[in-house]
Structure formats: C-alpha cells, structure tokens
Image (cartoon, rainbow, N blue to C red; front, top):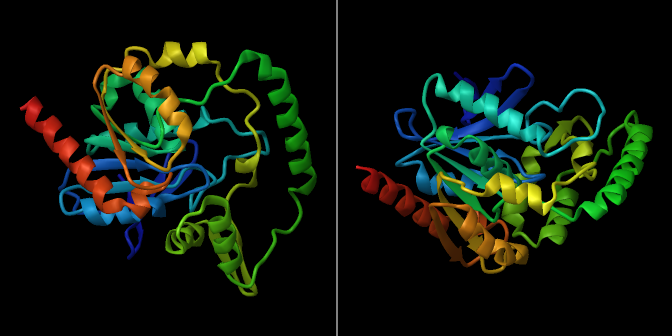
Length: 298
C-alpha cells in the first residue's frame, strides 16, 4: 500500500505516473482520513490538526506533485489545476485496494480539487471536509485571451532561467520571514511549512518546490462550467471558513448552499490557515461532524 520512509511517519506512494510523499499519523486500524494541502504548502500543514484527531483517526496527508518531498511533474510545460484531479483519482484507487478513506479533508487548493473530484465521482467519497475552499476558481470568458498570453509570457521567462543554479541561503530563516510577510501566518507555522519545502546542501538550503507552481495557469473555468459541475453535489460536506479568511468565500456561500445537497457550514476564528492556528476547534468541529454522520447513517 504505502512504504514507510522514515521514523517520523513519512510515507511514499509510487503511482503509475508520479511518486508522492506524505506523512501519516494515527494507528493503521483507525478510520482513514485523506488530507489534501493548499497551494505552496505541504503535508506538514496538517500536523497540528493531526495531533488533535489521531487518537480516533488515521490521518494521511500527501504532498502534491512539486510540493514537499513529492516528485515534480515531468517536462517543462505549464501546470494546470486539473492535473491534481488525476493525482487524486489514482491515489484514491490505490488506497481503496486496502482501506477506503472515511473522509477527505481539503484545504484551499486541496479543497478545490476535492470538491471538483467529489462532484464528478460522488460514489467514491462519502464525506468531504472543505477548509477555506468551495469550488474550482472561475472567471469571465472574456479574460481567456489575457490569461493565456500572460501564462505563455511567464512560462517563457521560466524556460530561460530553468537551467540556472537554485538560490542557496545560509538557513531557512530568510524563507520563514518571507512567508510570514506574505501570509501573516505565525512564525512557528511558517517554519513548519518552509522546512518541508526546502532541501539542505553543504553550504545552506534551497527551495525544492517546483518553480512552475508560481506561474499562472493558461486557462480558468467560467462560472457556467463550475455551476454545471457543482450542481447536485451529493456527498455529505462540511464547509469550514475563517472569520479572517478569504472574503470571496462568503460571496460564494449562497451559491454553495444550492450546489451541495448535504452541506453543513461552520465559521471559526482564524485566518486562511485556521486548521493550523486554530487546530483544536477545527478538529472538534470535524470530529463532531464525522461522528454525527456515522450516527445518522446507523
């Protein structure tokens, strides 16, 4: 199923097209929760939440391709969020050979991918927990030309620099401070995330994240496409938002209540990474939700 790689609960999955790394918490005989992290994060983002849930559940958090310890996608072509759907499909298929996940938790990008996947394949995911995410991103079709041109320009710049040696820093402190300035996240959480996204050398550390992750996608779905995909979403879903999170989610909430047939919404104190900064309350909400679903089913 998975191969343990290190004492600190490291795991690896060799899928047909790529190798994924991750971390696992909790006993293997517990119900399995698959955790999907956000853009430029990694499996470590679920460490605080896992500490609260691992007594009752087995938490498996993977690194998306190009993040953490997972392989980068081959070639040098631009990336697209739809690629993650194929990763998730093959991973769920692999996991189901031994233990079907009791739930999927997705934060931000992970939630976007999980919501789209579950909309298309509701029979494969009984329970879905979305943290600061509702649906795939969308924009007006009139922006297609501008987005495509900008994507190609940024990709051309990447190609010119891809053979350059990566920048090496004396320590991860520079990266930690940069992440703090960018996100406003507490230092301890920035350090937890940055540590897994960097690699050590004799003279210092450098990023091991795929630089293509920072390039714009060449195309984005329209609202009509997202609306058609998400309508009739039948999996039982818990949506957790933060009172200082992404304001766009509040705007989309009325539509989400029409999309999802079985939706529970909870707002908690915190920012976009509330599953780290407010892990205790987030875990309580998730645990209560999963327990209530099991009780209602029984």
